[in-house]
Length: 463
Image (tube, rainbow, N blue to C red; front, top):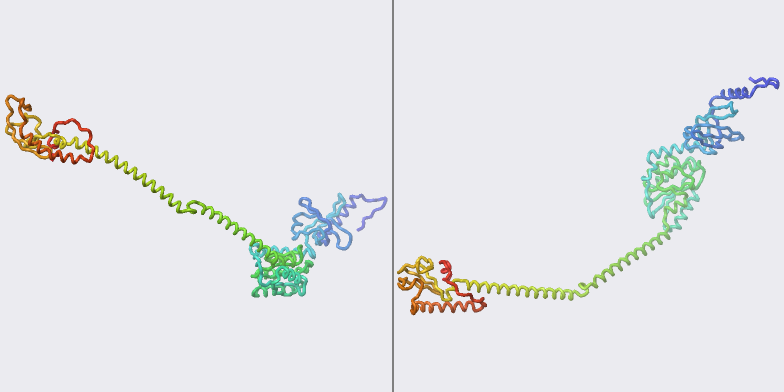
């Protein structure tokens, strides 16, 4: 229904905007196809400019960050998408925009979304874990090469490998590398090379191409076949910016086929230089060790104990002789002093002995019961007594004392009894024996004569 107006009866702006808003709201929720021309994020809101793929027209699209981030992978400028949106006309400003409720990629974007979902699925199964990846052999005996028929990738790999190591050998499996049959043929080639004897590493090589051309190398069946392969696998698909899913599951990712050849085959020139450097290093280490040991041996042999061992033995022998002589002198002096002490002690013992006293002319008078007579008063007239001398003894009988002489005194002018002279003659041999006994020892100075010792014990010791 058209709005009737005239110059005489115009309608205000608000009426027009309100009517436009009402017409827009009657469109409801719609799906809009377009290409993202501009993209801006402000806080929790994302602002897009959606351009028509053919005509030079565009519309403003507003959505929340949650709606935009739900797209995997997130779309960028230039990506073609389909937006489920609600038209919205702001009557206050007179602006039109679409409020996006969902965004879906179209074409390449949709394909990338499917690949991203497959990547998350395989990663969740653990096929991309770093600990599953195996180390490549240092020098493979045979290299299995999977490539296109008469492709530049095959020529590059073989040329670079032969230049780095001329004796390298290849087993080439030529397959389709794009199209619907490529994934199946590559899987069969992988299985054949994995079971072939002598093949130590497998290289899957292909030159660059579009995303659709490289799609077979992101096939789920091929990814699982490579994951189950017992032989290390090198992925050399496309260029540096191309990352099919095969790169994630392979044991080694090479940026290009040429890079794969460099990383699989060692450079003989570099290895020879490395060996020469290691030899020089080993030679220097061994030479240094020998020099150190030689210096140590020279220092050890220059010591007196090693250089002239006989002189060292002689020196110790001189020390032993000196110590022996010193010990002999010390022991001799000690023995001499001890002998002197023994001689002096013996002389003193002889001087103090009752036998020595008896040898000087003294005698011991004893009762019949061996009691020593100490005074004349102790003797009864007619009592039998024993007079002990140095070498013998004499039995006598006590007579009465003279009336005019006190006991123990002799009358003036009288001679000693005859038996005293006899006793002195009997003691002469004893004196000579004592003189011979003391001939070898210097006797100490003689003391004044002492009376006979008391007690029967001293008398008995003279026997």
